[in-house]
Amino acid sequence: MAGGALKYRHLSRSSAHRQALLRNLVTSLIMHESIKTTWAKAKEAQRLAEKVITLGKKNTSASRRRAESILFQPLDHLPKLFDELRRRYAERPGGYTRVLRIEPLNKHFDQAPSAILELVDGPKDMRFAMTAKTLARERAVVEDEDEGEGVSEKLDEGIREITAVNVRKVTRYRPSGMEELEKEVKRLEMRDQDEKKVEVCGFPSLHPSHVSRFLLAAVV
Image (cartoon, rainbow, N blue to C red):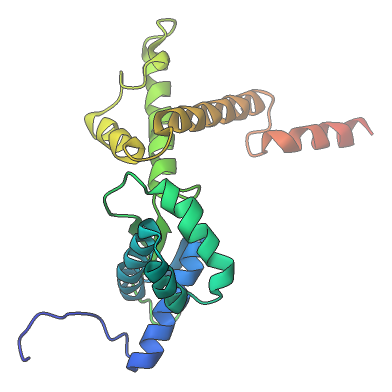
């Protein structure tokens, strides 16, 4: 209808080609949990991915047949969908995927808007990693301002309000979310400490694991 709202993006493809493209993207998402594509493709694939994960949560014979008709190589991916992902999102009412804008993948050609399509609460959850990195950085600032008072022992003290909101978002439905976030923050803090030690030793541009190699080469 002229002037009506766009129901879906055609992606400059025929109906059959468009459906095959989205099935391929969703299959790759289930397999890798994070994919890069254009913004338009990511938004359309997100809609289908949400439906597929909902089928996995239903865990019925009908939902298995429907998911099998959507995914390529279903024998390889149905076990993950109906086991790991179903248990991961058992308490989450929706919003199993996230689309993040990134720089154009084809900078020298069409420069089409690009994005990352990822599964939330998984090992490749970028917002979780960014929140942990921000939290570690803000803790370091607080420790520098108030050393010796154990400020870093408390997760919600000495951080900005927006960071506290993001902490609640990324841990709300994630199994053992606070424990995993704390573990990731500790790992980042230890890495930063190692890098500072390396800078003190006069190797500002080297990774800590490379220092021993240079020292050994110098001795030889």
